[in-house]
Image: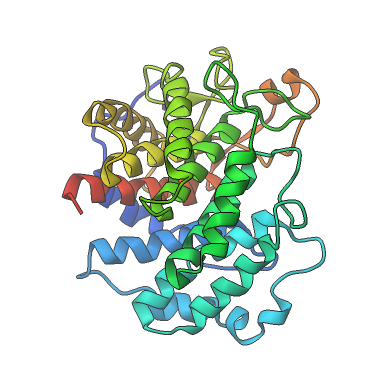
Length: 335
């Protein structure tokens, strides 16, 4: 793949153009074990069509892709599946809306119930893994929105309020066992809070504190945004590589905050930089540059610094870039 850091593209595709291109490469399957990257990409295709209703409706194709999970919900997960797998159903409410089929909302509720009954007794990691911020928020938030059952949003807010690994520099540890500022880990945190705030009622008692925490984190992040718009594999270590998925997720979180009104217009600059960084590192064939491979908690900072990356097609980066592209297009369109 062409090294874009050595030859930056000048003629960048617009968010809607790049989103349309990405949708042909990502969001085409939902294989077992279901995982969040597949779900985000399916959601992205549905969102793209909502933004461009004159385009081909992907609902029939997606309904066919996910049919087995609706007909046999008892077989959704294996005993070894966890929150990353549950988050793979984040498309369910959007497919229900586009098809007027409530079976997808029932499926969403079935998945959301797996996060309970309490934060102590459910699957959320007591070591406060930041991945769970997103995995829980994207499912529990949607379940609340579709049912107005407060058990979902209260469980989510209790979990996020219990997280105590945000540091004075405004960055989150990966988890208590790994007190390092991993790029995609901090992006999971930003994305998780953005998802939670999207669905959390304005009058919910936890909203002011969660919003305050989220903005503290974003302020910590933008202090480390590279001039290219990207963020590093380890957020506060500029000698580490510029990492694609973290940038797409953080950029999305800022764009969502701008669109929903909890971030002021001064944040436009940071979202725009992030978008340019992502667009410059995405080819028309859906190939991406420098996406960190799957990463559980690691024992040393050197393991994060030296963690390998992929170039080319990559579901982690592609799914999040699709979400980011649609969110930027929505922001530009004022919808």
